[in-house]
Amino acid sequence: MDHPLSLAGAPMDAFHVCAFFDSRDLEYDVLTPFYIQGFENGEKNIHIIDPALIDDHRLRLQRAGVDVAHCEACGQLEIASWPKAYFDGDGRFDKDRMLGMIDRMTAATREAGFTRLRIMGNMDWAFQDGPAKTDLILYESEVNEVLERNCQPAICVYDMAKLSGATLMDVLRTHPLTLINGVVQENPFFTRPSDMMKEIEARKARAAA
Image (cartoon, rainbow, N blue to C red; front, side, top):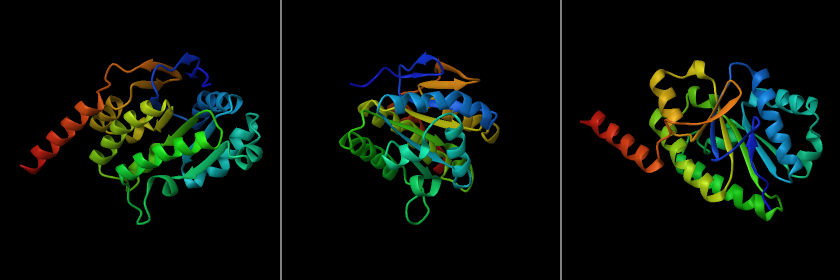
């Protein structure tokens, strides 16, 4: 049976979280207990991060008491780099490919005997020759339906300093939960995926006119 989900001491009433941090130390202070909770519950963690920070990520988890080598060996922890997870063979971001991959990962996790899959994705890749803004926002909106259908939690980690005001608002509107300054809150700006998709298409039409 799946255990109740909580993050930063608060129950998770939705599955898609937009998390903002101003330091890596704060990020790990807040999120590492969430990862450990998953390990203790017999769940799997997939962490998608900057390739340059993979060794540091393992070290920080190890210092927090996670037996990283064991968890990776038994399949309970998978650390993936941005290129492996988000980009196709030609180095392009394809939101439909990514949505399908998350669906398949969830099924594979259950088949492997884990009770749930927890995903953490650091989103800085989107601002380093990443996808068009509309593709990113459409993905963040549509993935809500995949996560909700599979009862699968995902935390998208953003550096607020890298977001323009308009992009920041769009990112917020695609996540039902926010995590800011270590506090989880229901997001009053959340927009249902069907409505967000209509709005994006309307923007495209106006831009093309």
